[in-house]
Length: 111
Image 1 (cartoon, rainbow, N blue to C red):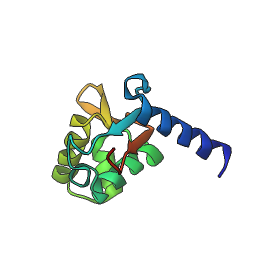
Image 2 (image 1 turned 30 degrees about the vertical axis):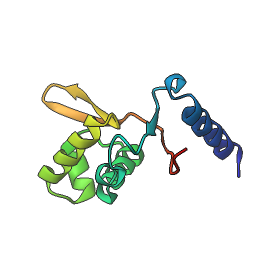
Image 3 (image 1 turned 135 degrees about the horizontal axis):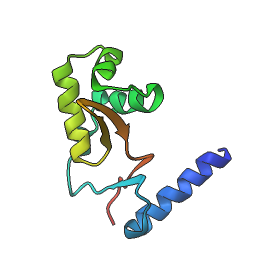
Image 4 (image 1 turned 180 degrees about the vertical axis):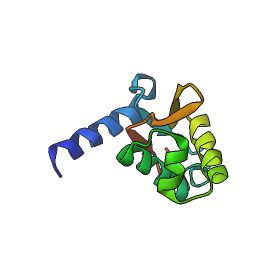
């Protein structure tokens, strides 16, 4: 485990212990609030990774990168935006998608 992995582990531990003190770039998922597998599907996870790695300038560019229909990409973007996982920077009629969270932490066990 390298230094970055240890730092991320500490951030996740802190976020789980003190969710009110968690930085904005970390999302803590409470399984009682929604079904994670319905929000973070494989397609939506790929979408988030593509935005992070490829940095598309528009939704149309993202659609081409993913090789998916625009309607399904737009629907997935809306779901992710509703859960605070991404936002859009608007420039005229164009929207540039931006990932809002660096870390998504899930507690798998209940206490």
